[in-house]
Length: 282
Image (cartoon, rainbow, N blue to C red):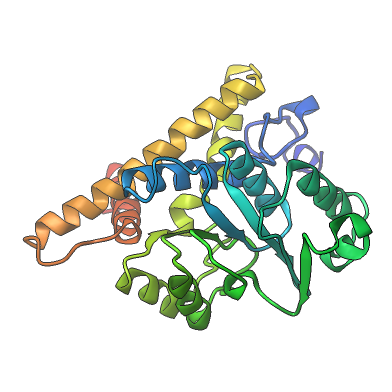
């Protein structure tokens, strides 16, 4: 409404994340978390970590939008979501949260505005779900996958060491730059497959783009249609990361094995350079 007042016209395609009643898209709130899991799924399968996400032990930080929907989608894939956290501490469940657990956690956070420390006050969770005050998820147990989804620089060198020692094989960044440079270097030195935020958490922006397409066409796609398009987009993003890493490795004459992170950097730079050249800036 404020944008319309300023420009004197209605242009639904300029702003995204709108309510569905005036041009918003299905699954926009879920998109970053869902997209992260789709990217992770590709990484797990193509890097021969596992045949699928089913049964993999996953540590997630945060308990907001991205964390909640990443956890939901991981459960749909059959993975075990073992942790969620907030700024005060971490919930840990060795057997993995159930779908009912996740629903109750989301209700606590979204409807009641509560803290995770309140969750285990009920006797029904006694012994099964434990709250650790002042602790991050990364040093809590044995994990196959880590998904930092809370905040910048939350996963540091000591956390990376703990994850590697626990057997972690893959990391996917759901937050923006949640891993410190030292942590990333440690992961890559120890052959942990790393999905950088610029690629792995692109699902939200991707669905914003889909929202603009729907606005331009004057249509509203179903939830299933949007989710299918999001999945294809995340697979394409993964493909580009792999392609970038392959090109860099070939150009080095095979002296260096470049990673998905390097591939994402290279393909992102190339995309910007091509656009600048097409627009006559270089």
